[in-house]
Amino acid sequence: MAPLRADRDFAPEDVEAFLKAGYWNDDTLGDWLRHWSEEDPDGPQIIGLEGTLTNREVYDRAQRMAGALLSLGIVKGQAIGIQMANTPEFIITYYGIALMGGVLLTMHMPYRAHEMAPLLNHGRAVAVVCEPASEKYNAPDTMRELKRVVPTLEHVIVGPGGSVPDDCVSLAEMFQRDPGTEINDPPHAADPVLLCFTSGTAAAPKAVLRNYHSALANGRIYGEAINIDRQDRIMVVPPFSHVFGLCCLHSGLAYGAPTVLLRAFSPELFVEVVERHQPTLLFSSPAPVAATLKSGLLTGDLVSVRHAVLAGSIVPPAVSQALEERMPNGKVGGLFGMTEIILTTATPLEGSIDERHLSTGRPVRGMEVRVTSPESGQMLEAGEEGELEIRGYSVMSGYLNNTQANADAFTEDNFFKTGDLAIVDVDQNVRITGRVKDIINRGGVKINPTDIENLIAAHPAVTLAAIAPMGDDIMGEKACLFVTLVPGKVLSFDEMIDYLAKAGIAKLRWPEKLEVIDEMPMTPTKKVMKHVLTGMVSSSS
Image 1 (spheres, rainbow, N blue to C red):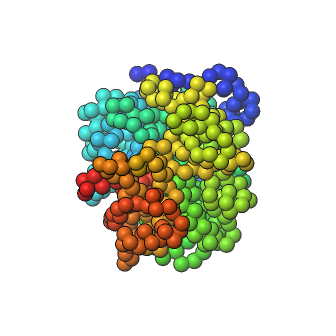
Image 2 (tube, rainbow, N blue to C red):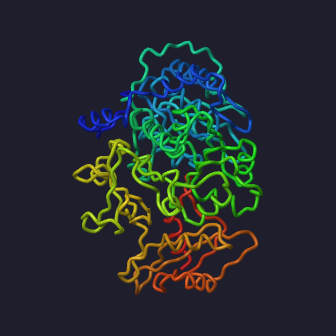
C-alpha cells in the first residue's frame, strides 16, 4: 500500500520562500525530542495527576514505541489512528509514530464506529490505538468491529488500565520492549506526520495532511511570540485530537516547557490541576473556562498564570474579562486558527484590553489576511464585515483526496476561504464576528447572532447561549435562543427581552423564542452544534 501523499501540494516557489524566510525549517519531532533528552534529560516534559515524565523518559518510550510499530510491519507514510484522552500514552504514541515515519490520524473521544469508519477508510489506516474498555464505552470491541469495514486496518492497540483482548496488542508492552528494529529511513521535514479531519460528509471527509514543515512551524513561531521557555508549565485543555491541542503541545516541546495534562474537562478536575501544578500558561476554549468560573469551585486566584489564551471558538469578551480578573499576575489573550490553518493571528502579550479581549490579534509573521464580500468576492475596506481569507506558510496545501473541496476552498490567488465572518481594523487586528452560514435572514434583514450570544452568555443566570434559525412562513427565518442555566437560576422570555433592550440591542435583532435546555450540544472541541439546535427548534415548532 502506497504511503499517504497530498494530491494538492505546495507550489515549489512557496516552499522555497517559506524556508528562506525561516517560517519553515528542517526540524522533525525526532530532532526536538532528541535535543531535549540530551540538553535537559531530567527536566519534566509531561506533568499529570499520576506523576511526571522527564525528557529522557519520554524519548526512551517513544523510541520503543517506534520500534514496536515497525515490528508489526507498519512502514513509513502509513496512518495510525488514535482515540485517546489527553494522557501521557497519547503523547508518547504520537511521538513513536513520528519517529518511525508514520502519520497520526486523529479521532475525537466521543466518536463511535459510525463516525470513525469513514475517517479510517479515507486515511487508509493500518492500525488504531485506543483506551481499554470502560463501563460506558468498549473501545477495543468497537475497533475490532471496524476491521470488518476498514480493509486496511490490521492492528488494534489497547492502552493500559484494563484487559487487552487476545487478538489485540498491548500498548504498555510496546512502551517496554527493546527498540530492536532500527529506523533505517527516518522521516524528513517534507514528509507527512499528521492527518486531521474537519467537517464533511461521510462520503467525502475533509482531511488535512500536514508535513513537519507546516505542523511544527506553528508551535515554534507561536512559542516565540509569547516567550515560552523551560520555566513555563503549559496547561492544555483542548483535546490532542484537535490542532489547537497539538499546537500547544508543539509549542512546549519546541522550547522545552512541560505540558500539564487535563485528561478530560470537568470544573472539578480543572481546579484540581490548576491548584496542584500551578501552570504559567493556560490554553483553553472559552466554554470550559466559563463553566469553571460559574461553578464557584475556583476559590482562589490563578496566581501562577502569566498568560491565558482562549481560542477554538468565538470568545465572549465577558469570559476573557472574568478570567483576567482572577489572574493578578497575568493577562488573557487570544489567537485564531482552524484545522486547515492551525495558526493565523495572535494577540500581543502587552496589547490593550480591546486588542486582547475583542480581537484574535494580528497576523503572526508570514501570514496575510483580508476580508471579502461573501456575495461578490470583492475586497472590503478596514472596518467592514465580510468573509475572512488567509494566505501564508500555515495554510494547508489542500484536502486529501477531495478535489471539489479544494476547488471551493481556495481563491485564484491562493487565499483560503475560512467561512468565518470577520472585521479587520486599520492595525490588522482581526475580530471574528460569526460564520457565514450562521447568518439569519429575517425577511431580507441579515442578522449576525454572535454579539447577542455573547451578551446573553454574560447574564448571571446563563452558562451557555446560542442562537439558531427557525423557519417562518412570512419572514423566512427568525431567531431562537437556546440557553443552559446556572443550577438554581431561571430566565424567562420577558427577562431576556428586557435584558437585551437595556443593552441597546435593536428590536428587529431580538430572538423570538427562548428554549432552556439541560445541555448544549457541543463538538468534541467545545463548539456549539448549531445544526442540532436547528433540528431541535424545528421539531418543537
